[in-house]
Amino acid sequence: MSVSSPVYPALFGYKAWANQELFALLQALPPEQQPQLHGCVRILNHTYVVDRIFQAHLLKQPHAYQATNTEHTPDLAVLARDVAELDQWFCQYVAGLDEDALAEPLSFYFTDGDAGTMSRQEILLHLISHGAYHRGNAGQMLKALQVAPPRDIFSRYLHQLQPTRR
Image 1 (cartoon, rainbow, N blue to C red):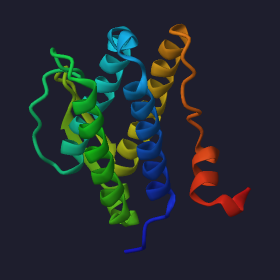
Image 2: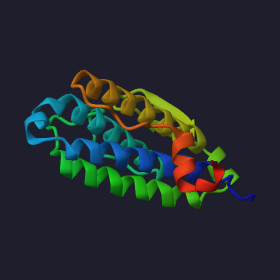
Image 3: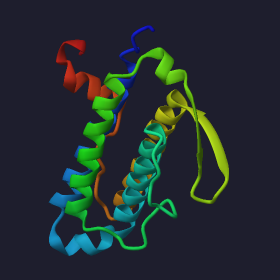
């Protein structure tokens, strides 16, 4: 068995950093703007639910979700905490994977009942791209409210992590 590439820890570190920046901005907005954030919270909750569903697939365990979002919209602070905890789980999880584990095909069922098979590597890449896509959606919603979203850019994350790269 060979050791995993450092790309997954870097990507999931970036995902955790980008999520933290976005949630910090959302929570810092004045109370009068908080009700306008419902769409952002819904889309970020969807991302969290999908992450949890695929976490279960990675662990070959069942999950309790019937859809890719919940009926109830969670409180922003609760969602921020839950996302941060799950992001840390993923950071630890990917650090322990080797190439054989990454390549292993996993069979599961999507929430619509259709069967699926993806390798761990494909699932992890899906979660990175899915999260970035929906953080971008939330950023566009913020722009509509005249709020500048965080600069969700991998190179910015790397430069903050390792300033000598600049």
